[in-house]
Amino acid sequence: MKRLIVFFVAVVLFLPVRGFGCANAQKEAVEISNEFSFKLFNQINKAGKNAFYSPFSIVDAFAMVYNGAKSNTKKQISKAFDFPLNPLPLNEGFKLLINELKNTKKPSNNTLKVANALWAQKNYPFKTSFIKTMDRYYGGAFHKVDFAKETLKALNTINSWVANQTDNMIPQLLSKGDINLLTRLVITNAIYFKGKWKTPFDKKLTKKMDFYLTSNKKEKVNMMYKEGRFRYFENNLLQLVILPYQNDTSMVVILPKKITDTEKIFNNLTYAKFKKWVKSAHKTKIKLYLPRFKTKEKYYLKKILMKMGIIDAFTMKADFSNLTNSKALKISKVVHEAVVEVNEEGTKAAAATAVVLQLKAVMKPFNIPVFKANHPFMFFIIHNKTGLILFAGKLAKP
Image (tube, rainbow, N blue to C red; front, side, top):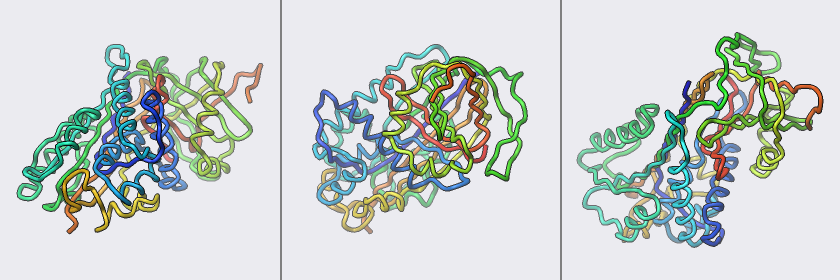
């Protein structure tokens, strides 16, 4: 009946590396976010394990933080995220992109909203220029809290905001150990999506079927079914189908043809390949089988981001002196949580990320193709007009 997607991110860092003009700023922001989606997947993917996250939420939050970074801290983040050295076009790109998402045409009972917020230690000397930049480009209002004396109250305030923005799909993003009396800033981003399939699955056609976890291990799942014309692509290794929602978004599903090739295909998946396959998809009549599923994933991204080259930001070498007049802050935590539920009516999904800064202390022409997702597959929820990947995931176990 309805599907919904929610995403939340909180970050305290941001940098640039590739220069681009403001005319193409929105497109470049999309490219940066989508490229990061596949970089991150390569780091978090584990055989036999589900994955689900929102690349846009993480990148948007780090884009805000980037404006506070300097020196080697900035260079490392810039390289990891492929941010331009000049933050202005990056900021302009995200401003345009956020506005585009907010203005997406939505039928009744369909929603797509984006929100940013910053949670700052009261009386701490944040630079006015940084505060103005957050408000102008990201719509991120500064909320004063007292991490030093009322840590639990600050934690509950942030978690309440996240819960509200994600329709309670992420009720507690941050735990007690995620912030402390040394915390000085938490930057948050939230995306919420609610919608329906353009052509719903008929519940009467849903049946118990086998889902193969491996070539010799299976379990019973509720397998949905429908037949219709969808944008479809296949080659000798995989099948791809694009399932539209009602509000200018779609789900892209990538299914390896052989279960034994699954991880090999996923581990070699790149944004360039993804774009090429999506572009090559054409309307075709297919028989589609897709399981109902729900998965919830939570990631602490510090170690992963350090493996990607962001080192100084988490150490005593951190330089966020564009955020405040001193070099007293470093990133202590980057928390990301995401939830997705897919059924006959649509999709529900929510995701949240928090970054915490603290003191240093080939198509068959005649036969109808069958797309049977009865073994591990990848899926992406994309914004049609911009091509932005809002959510990405792998289903290994429904």
